[in-house]
Length: 308
Image (cartoon, rainbow, N blue to C red; front, side):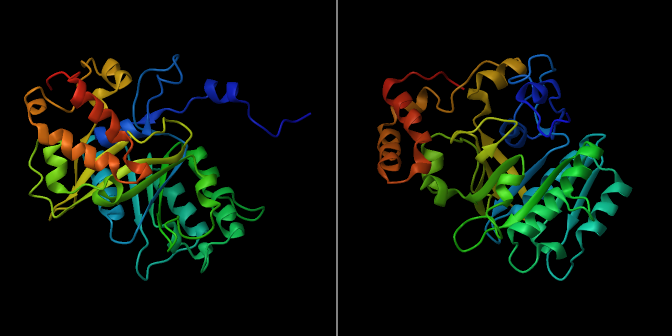
């Protein structure tokens, strides 16, 4: 009898390889093979043969971030990158896009955005979304070509008025990982000055016109989830620029990079009582997105941090 399913044991045996971007704030969030599949080398980054969804409001920086990743990988690695920008009046259908991928044979493909595929339709119904990802008897879908090429595909999606990926709610369930892009002050309820005073980042933030967050969503099949998996980015005249994440506080990351686990707060900063007050104000604001600050508050009060 032919099986129509894949067991978790088979998934582990066929653990995906990883495409490392060289950007800590991306590779750390996507995850590592070694933490889940000990038989494989510890390689961080985008899992090959898989699909991830990037969702964010219009103008937040999705395309800028995607171009930053594409340029970094194309310029500093031997990986072939395809970035298909379909915004504005430029639209193609699914069959044309798949034929394009077959010709290019990229290691990393970025579709910006899936909403602009003609097959998506006006509202992105369940039927349309399923056909795009899984295909139909007449037309293969993105899942098939991605697995065939062994590439990683990033599909970018706009958010609707409810703050969800535009179209059917089916889309996040059909991909392997979901990442969200949002404004820093909307997610963390904290602005430029507070971010600097809390000691989360001691560099120069003044050169950025705006800050935004790239974070792991609720689904992450080949990586870890949790509120700490966030990276900070800034807008510059040149585009998006990676600023900071807390990977150096992650024992797995540090072990695989031969680093000592660090803290984002230095000893000198502990002497400033205003830090405790600022963090308390952040924690006390009613937002489920801010609980990751509570651990920082406990460290400050207990002074259980080391110098970075």
